[in-house]
Image (cartoon, rainbow, N blue to C red; front, side, top):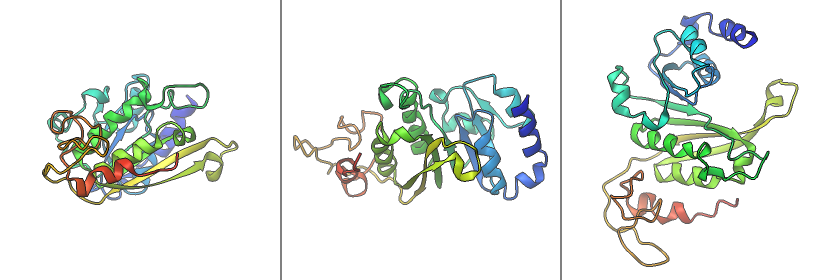
Length: 239
């Protein structure tokens, strides 16, 4: 009840929320829409949500009437968005599940079933090619996957900056450190030229992301070695 009242106050004036409806926002792992509240105040328009917990749906439906809600990121594609009249996406935001990353237990990191949904997030980024991506997770991502996330973004043509920002920095009475990543698209993928070489084996036609057979592995390509090859994979992120 308390949360819903806050949401009602923040979402009271739809006209003020959508100052620039030409900036289209896709909100993943939406929860009750906190990301969208802030980004719409900055002038964006939320065109779709993806949230698996249907307990959050009534709040989203009440405050964003008519905005479609998808329930499984694993099945969400650009083609499905098009069926709802949603075309070009300018910004994708989301805080993918943190349970396997959290310092509360020795979890498997991005190899876990829940936090591994980052790779579905990345798949959509690669397919939809937004101008910007905004990502949130627990601060422990630094030790359990930040290098992989930054690598994936780099291999899709995105330059990313990250920072730890605590809730106390915006007035909350507790620390609650969170890691934030803001990425922008710098280049577009080009047709694979066959010059990616595995630095360990010398094999050609190797995917720079997973080292599998390029074109058959299902990763985010195609890329050339110059644009998204071993430079981004071998980069020492220092984590």
